[in-house]
Figure (tube, rainbow, N blue to C red):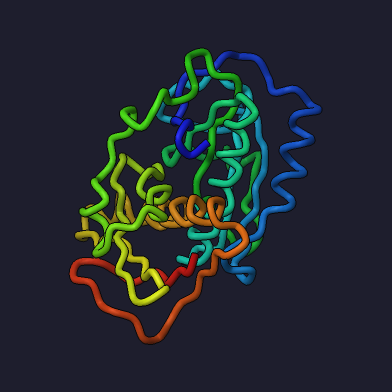
Length: 236
């Protein structure tokens, strides 16, 4: 699905079948976070119970809440990109939506959490899948890593807010150090939260391709990378 998924912005008005929703809910319950101490929460709400900058025809949305920390936002991307891939594998469309919010009068965040992001999902009214790698607009491998590494191809193809692709990698033995682009003040206000979620999305792509061997940790000792912030270290 990493090679086939695309963000879907146009949907039919048909609701997702209740039996399918039950399967989706069970899948979400089985997801594990990168940081158990900052586990997020997912809810399904009616599109009519939220406010958006654009009009959506799909009847339902996922709403993701998380602690207002980097760990919480990384968890959101990591866990719910797995959900994104799962939904698209079932023939549904999805789209991460940062410019929208549930109506406060109807939906209150869980205690200690804030709204992180939302996800549209439903029946697409267009072709939901990519036809091949030529459909992607992504940085070249040489632009994001010090050493060409085919294992990073799923990361390279990950979606990100406004296709910003904020990740970079440095190799050290069997370890791959992961970095996020350091943003200027104005861009940090518009992209900072989403880019932290983006990093979790990218890590999810590495995880689903190496589910038995994927390990993520944060190390006190790590190489510095100019203009980037250290996120953590991965072994595959």
